[in-house]
Image (cartoon, rainbow, N blue to C red; front, side):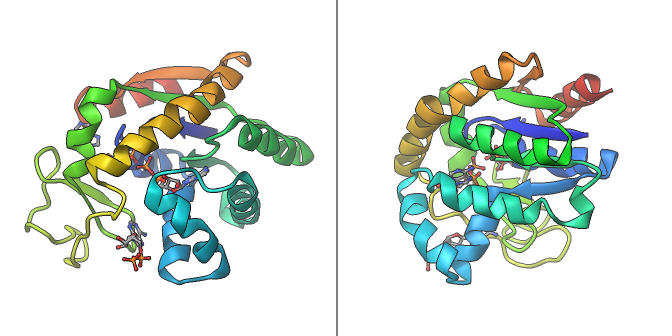
Length: 213
Ligand code: ADP
Ligand code: ADP
Ligand code: ADP
């Protein structure tokens, strides 16, 4: 399967991704995780991306299309993939279509994590991340077994620098202005499925499984 997850920050894309990935043996490409790794490693890409990310604005299309183009060449992505956080602009969606066309394949389904903005601040400000794996926890909704530590490795959890109420505001603006048109783009191809992203994680998972079965 070739899947795209679209939803505002905090809508649950990163939480559902590993479950879908394991069930269908897909590769999981999260542009946000890849960009944060580049920022942390201070690579030329990371240095270019950092300012926009800190402000909650989108990184330029050329940069993210470049990393996706590179990542999709991995052998593990040939049988199928989950794109988490990409495409976020119509230009990115068009570039993705061009890439896939060359391989003679296309996107099967776009999962739209539909949720009201009002719920997102609590989700974002309570989010804790295990940086090396991207696993997420929440102080209230998904607490780790040992506070502040990853359940699998026991390593410390961090809060993302952009997970503040102020930066969330610009991330949401970017979502409505630049990413919602991407949903329309795929709606015209009749491949969008709506998910009730405001429901508890298990119910969202059940809905994902229904859509993909
Ligand atoms: P969230 O999971 O909270 O929606 P991400 O981790 O996907 O956020 O993205 C974090 C930041 O990385 C974004 O605010 C943006 O600056 C940058 N980013 C990630 N993916 C893209 C993309 N496809 N296009 C442009 N910028 C991106
Ligand atoms: P995204 O990748 O879309 O930015 P995440 O999956 O990281 O979103 O979820 C944001 C925060 O909300 C995390 O702390 C996560 O544990 C929590 N969360 C995810 N899904 C739900 C849900 N259905 N109900 C309540 N909290 C959730
Ligand atoms: P700073 O700008 O404070 O020097 P970095 O540039 O190292 O911090 O990283 C930017 C932010 O992203 C930091 O809050 C860091 O902890 C966080 N971060 C780095 N890698 C990841 C990752 N893979 N997942 C989530 N957050 C990460």
